[in-house]
Image (cartoon, rainbow, N blue to C red; front, side):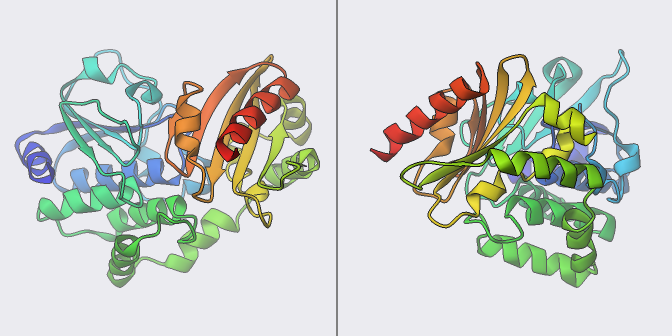
Length: 315
């Protein structure tokens, strides 16, 4: 599969690179890493994300060239969809925009595309992009290594999650040897937080609820909190990790209001509970240890639905 993708890159000229909406570090890192490499190969490239680049990641090389919308007449030889899980998560009609659609992902059940390069054992989509570029006999530049490193750093939780396998450390080490500044990337990602985020966090943490068994916990954010803090949705990134850090908690949940009686739910598991299957049962998706879904109802109703599902898993 990697060789087929490398041949597509060699034989074609006009590329679209896109990832999922509300992008995380892996979505942005893999998008910019691949787009920068393709440009260095002399290709014509459009990098797109429907929701743009989170402020904390705008230092990455190539970020100024990423767009959020396409011109109406845009057509491409090849479209790469990265880290999306489902094609609809790109929020654009990718299938109609290209001759060949390539799906590169490490989420289970991600089965779309003319070529579907899926590896659920990969620590991040950024690692899979790294593999593809090596197969192209491309010499990885600093402008490519930097966003790919951020993708790996982000999706492994700074190499703390179970996804931080041997390959993640090996590839990260090679990127360091190329000259990336690992401290600077980590500092920009984790130690350059906006005041709005901290104000919002101060409103979210009091909503903490820990189950009577102590094995799952949650926090929640409403539209009123968002407005009071003067924050945006991107400032909520990582909030699910606060209940996850509690001793004994196996599943963490973050409820985020996205409309009247409408909530997005983020799940994180320490491994004993498959939150991916739970999310798919709610018409969502994700990994064994990280997943999400959208549920209609009041906050108390949504919390009760999720608690019931987790209690079933634990029984």
